[in-house]
Image (cartoon, rainbow, N blue to C red; front, top):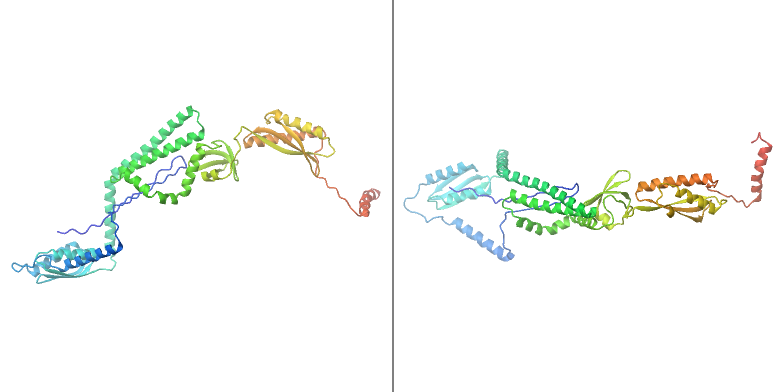
Length: 443
């Protein structure tokens, strides 16, 4: 009995690595297809071979399958009945009519697919005492919802059976992934403890931890793939990754750019976890640095995620690179005050503040003649954190105001002097207060 043709199948395997470290995403896609290799040929030669193969197939179909017998020939009715029973059991044909006349079989009716039509002709040719076959079967183009439902049901049933067959392999692969996660955490903990004893910079410790975790995850996912798909080998997986590296590089250019920028930042960069930085309009404390992003906690409590490439390519101000920072303010006194006395009062007031670091580093300089005052530049050192600067500035401003008030030194308001070219306007303005005193009722 002739079995129906089997369609070639292809397997596509896709998996995604787990996201670890809160922000790390590492995507690997493996596409394995069971396809035969085809040798590249020139178009003309390939077309000639196709035409020759078609001619040979047509000649073989038109020629008798066996030598034509003369004696002991099977009855035409038996041939027709036998073929009708075979085709009826296949349940692929409608309105099928099989006729045999002197060993020439004529098939007419409807077949559900072109492959089943060809299959019917091949069965008839291989039947005993059949000289030739006239295949007049047509492919049925009508839509049969019941047969489509049967096909869907059969496909789902096949998928379910394949899933049950592969279930032990899937469980084994899941166990490998869980073991990889546990092993990655254990190795990361041991590496951090080992590097802590050597007093290595925090960013360098994070870099070693993250790169080691990535390597463990890649190895674990390759092992899980080999376990789940027995036909897969690590060499095949790496080959597919190598062939797709160019496409992956173009597709994930920004991701790889941030990845390498993160490695450089963690390897050797002037800021680390816990530092306060200013990047563009963002000012805050560095919470975490990964190989892809840097998380900055702003001064108002908001968390901002900044791609590493932005930090690496743009200007970054590290506010806590040194333990102390210099703060400056401008203070003005009236033109009628003594400059030296004002300088001494301001200097003593600043040096008395608790949040001023290094009393000898306080500097007070007369800076300029402003429109209403003589301005002094006051500079001192305090803690590097933003809260230290705000607290110190508040204390210094209050101390200067209090000291100037106690010394009777005026902090002037803006003055405006009005000059009139017409003397009559000046005389009228000068006479106005006297007229108000003479006539209080009018006033």
